[in-house]
Image (tube, rainbow, N blue to C red; front, side):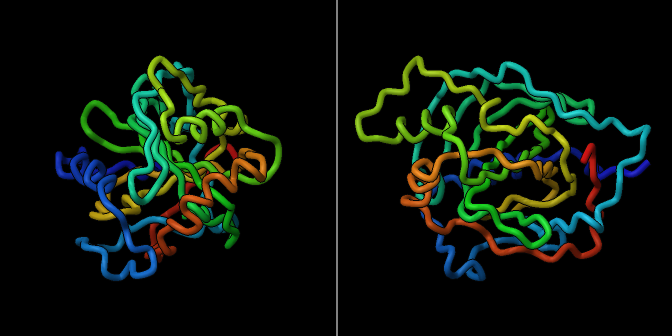
Length: 238
């Protein structure tokens, strides 16, 4: 059976690292200076669709989301990304249960599909009870306005009160749930590895005005592409 599950559960330092990565500004112009313990399984990558390997038929493949309408805990510009903290949305990914901790946005997209960048990529960071992290990557393209994206934009305005507000995570995910799966890392320091990635190639739309609102804050906050180094990329349902 082909699979990319980590051999062991993520340790406490990975969770702490994910939290620490949300503090302070990052210099994206000099990424080589970022502190890390780099190895050979880093993110993001270019997903070459023709080279991806189809999952075995007997592997669990589903990506299911429920409680998609979730209370907003906090919306912030954390110094290197626009981030939304929310903790009610749950997911069943390849037969395992995860809870959404936060999602944030990168411009342009960190992952590429056959060399193509999208204007924006959302990272939905899910955590399992054992501490393992699974990140769903979603591409955003210009098109129809997105109500959930507008909620985030409005909540960033000075004086906005997010108390008692909710957001529909489902509006930020494509209806087509096929994905590419590989084992990688956080894309901000400490760049910790052993993170499960699920990149959805079907884009979600935002209006030009909505994309411009994100780009006005961060015209570039994407990490450079990293070498695959022989890691398999598995295709599910595409």
